[in-house]
Image (cartoon, rainbow, N blue to C red; front, side):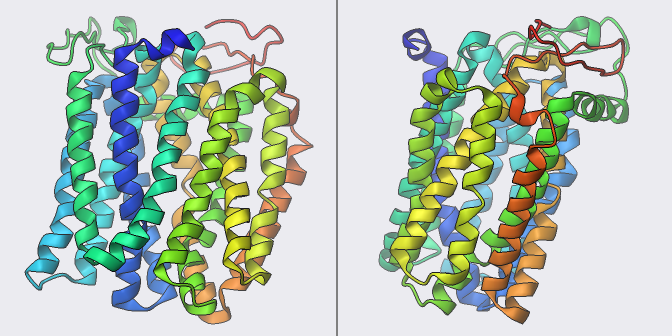
Length: 439
């Protein structure tokens, strides 16, 4: 761990993304609150989440190919610069008296595309910034920084909305994206490894010109297909992806109506809503801090089983309990369980997937696991508008219960985290090995 923190490039990466996530956490509260003020509609809230997710999903596979073909650092800096311009367009339009719901939808859609580009490069870059043996600690550290930002962001956003106004609060997110661009520029290590035989260009420093591959580069469709095939043919990654997809269906419906429920059903103020939302990130910070310790004492399958079990409770509590302190408690539980699930699943992917496929495979996973989120958000908004938010929470809790029960009929809960895979020529095939053989 001490060697990890002496790695200046990792420190810059963690610092930049922590600040960026802090700004995004503020926007994650302020932008839906602004939309809610303008529309006063649960259905609009559900559609807003879907509007951001659909472009993300459509862009995910191409973004993964770009992350494996081109300079990942440059892609991340471009995505952050574009997100900066999109975010600050909202307070500018508000100041000029021309802000509309259509503009909010447009910003959300374009942000979804930028998020896809950034995430594809970001997930794939870490194995080149730290040693493979440090991946679990690095993921836990990054998640702790992100979670700390998300913990403070909504609580601060609730106060800033009352003080500065909702749209003006978004200036902070613009500044956080600028800081991220600077820290990425300061990182010296290349974000990609050289794989000439696979058509992956050899990349040097951020400003270097990629070498030309010796063989013609496969088409984008073929490369996207390779990423999808790689995910499908690894048994554990396939199971994890399917379970996460189903869980995300429930979580998207829940998230789409949570703020509406707190404001219009149980009449919490913006300050209390911010505190309730921040408690989720308090849970993720706690979970991130303990993730390394837990991973050394429990096998991966056990951690994932406990994480799924803990996520069953909160939605049922939201359906029947009107007290802010109780909602804060179950949000904490959700964050704690979710971060431990994420640390295990991301570490597994980064450990077994080779660098020249990591961008494509990670994007394929995100497309799969987040594919249900637009449908979940829209369905949650419609159901809440017609029958009330509590019904949405009960349905989500039943879905989470089904995922936990299904886990006992798969190899997932018996996983040790040392499983390996065998890569075939030109395609992806895999096998689970008891010794977790190296690639």
